[in-house]
Length: 244
Length: 207
Image (cartoon, rainbow over all chains, first blue to last red; front, side):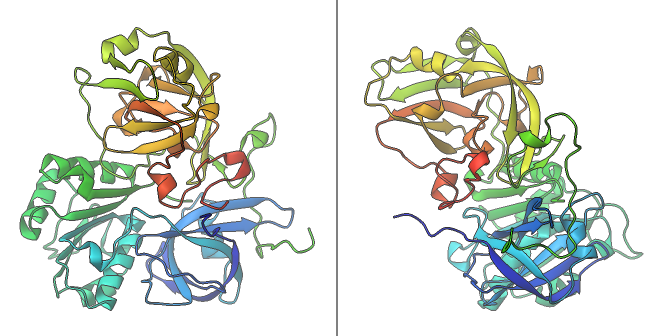
């Protein structure tokens, strides 16, 4: 039973939306769209006139309920090769070569249940947002907490949408590591084990955990949760340096 | 050239010319000096006094080594280029460990054995035909860059199969299971290629 190959296809950029100063969402219309699972990614391949190519992987931000398109939210890495092309060159109507969806472990759907603990660092929130959006689109009420580490309040991607979705069993807990506005009552430090203990206590035992972000954050979260008694096989991780 | 898609306005950032660097980077990969960490779950912490490594399955003599016994096996150094399916390639990585040839020699293979499945602490598995593992092509490493292998990079010991994408180089490896028929491992069962040759860009099933 040879699997169906993941073929490259030419997508059209149908919308570009600025999310933060450094992150934007690119809506790609796909001629051969396939349903994806929240948490999966697409590969992007850029080709120069002389044939030189560069590839990167970017997480899907949109839920599978959005047929025919995927949103990729991409952070601009200043010394990167592919992300600056998206931010500085690509315009609505441009074509970009992609294939996907890819990845079969760092995925969640309502049937997997919860309670669900999502921990994000920076643009690591993107695949987790697909999960939150799918949960909302399906009317699912799995108790869910998003613990989201960012430098400051302006660096929180999807901030308004997360504010709007909170409730119905979804808690959104930003933690700001560099600066916070006057009167900020949320967490204001890097994720650590005491913070994880508080979040766990409120969420209930044996959550299903998805942690995505820079290696240091994910290592802290995964090791911390195991220390706190979460079974290792309930903790799924996606670790990256910035995908440039 | 005629029908090839060209990304409007894309120039790209080529590896520095000079030397053979560019020719050592497989298609679709970029060069990094970092050593990124990618794994599907928490990093297992395995105390050396309970660590063990086993060879079983289609062997006439299953073998089990403690950490001290494993350290006493004939070791050598490798300097190899490694490529991760997440697109990074790192050149000239330096490892110390024991070749798969030397490990399997201790177990006396059953002639029916054609494949091995590497098992790791934490539950990870990956599969290899013996033909991809023997003749010095693969080893179990416990030192990287002259120091004990860090847990995040697979320590105490990891399999290293430098000519295949790095998911074949199972971190936290605890044993090799010899089988007659191929048994896809963790990522091989989740949409990734069964072989994973970076030079053929065998990233995903069907590539």
